[in-house]
Amino acid sequence: MKKIYFACSIRGGRDDAESYAALVRHIKSRTVVLSEIFADGKLTTDGSPGRSCGIHAQDLTWVRQADAIIAEVTNPSLGVGYEIGKAEEWGKPVLALFRDDGMHRLSAMIDGSPDVRTVYYRELDEAFVAIDEFLRLLDVK
Image (cartoon, rainbow, N blue to C red; front, top):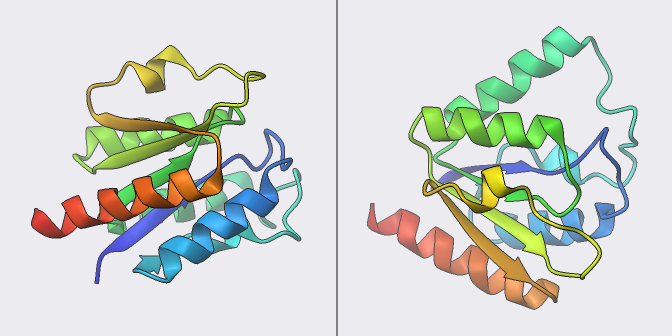
């Protein structure tokens, strides 16, 4: 079974926590999610407990262990951008999901990357379809 690292904004804002939880539930119904804690509604902008160096080490361990990255990138996050950059460096497939609500703009560094599959969506069902297609492509490789 493929292992997915799910990335989303934590310290950058938790306004989309309910969407993160729905996305993780959807991914988990199909494969393993290493970082499902990020979708926990109890997680605040304070982030995970522990020292920053420990969080950095744990998250990069998960990124290394993952077969691919699925990132919800609507809410800008330095950490998610960093993780996507490392995933690209390590040759991991990346799916970036951006909710096109007219209030946010996606970073050109993500949107313009030839190594990131970026999908704009309006409703979660559209994101679910993108996830399913991405996971199907992973099984081919």
